Length: 400
Image (cartoon, rainbow, N blue to C red; front, side):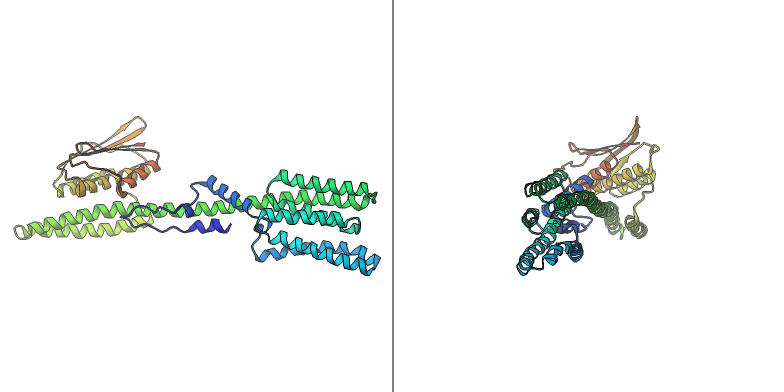
């Protein structure tokens, strides 16, 4: 799980730069299904030790309390040689038990599990109480593997081996039937518990991934809004500042008016930046068309727009307003156009917005502004098209 949590870092891009492109090693899962798949891969790569944090693994040693039954027969025999043999066997059992708990690799855990099973089968005829090792093997299996068929195979193989040994050596059936029954009962319960733990881990990591993606989406939204708002406003400030400088000596009254407009634009920009942080809401397409007309007029560009905005949902109107603002900003800054035509109409279930200028029309690749337009349109399941011949023409189609 640690390597999944390393994917939680991603910086915020500046409004005028390209969106962040995470490296391949830290790219987040694209959706919920991807997150669950990565989580499942992480769980498959880990052994039983991956089921708990490092501090909580010591809690698993509490189950050694059941190994007290291993001591019954040595106490009954009270033989030095038997005690020495038991001490060696029990030490090996503890080593295998510890190895299973702290193993980080599934194959190693399998080896420890197999070693415990073989140790129990070998020592069972000498100390019938040690048949409890078979219970430990069956109890650990669901946590070592996440495959139910593999669990069943382990249950069947160890049960068959214990049964064959008991029948072949003509041992008392109670000495191997009782641990067999208890082992299968514990194995079934642990299988359910282990699967539930894995499901909870997947759900927890998926929720973390959703929160991470939501934060990234919010950062990208703020970056787009700031780019659209400030790009338009600063372009207008530059235009009016240049105009005020040109008419300062010949027409001081006009210059004062332009400077007053710059002050109002700056105050509006400050408010819009605050709105962008909280979640930008456009004033409406009608207000944006009036603003576009004023901006283009300041740049000496004639606007031709006789369309009346149709009724639409607030989300669609906000997207189209911001696209119109960014398009007008691009015309003023890059197009070197003298004429702009804007059309807005409803065609069936869709709303069509067309923005066309007679500028240079040399768009070789999408910059951050055009990419932001496309992302906005696609976010509401619309279509965005650019035609760059004899000027630039943007065609936007969104559902009403």
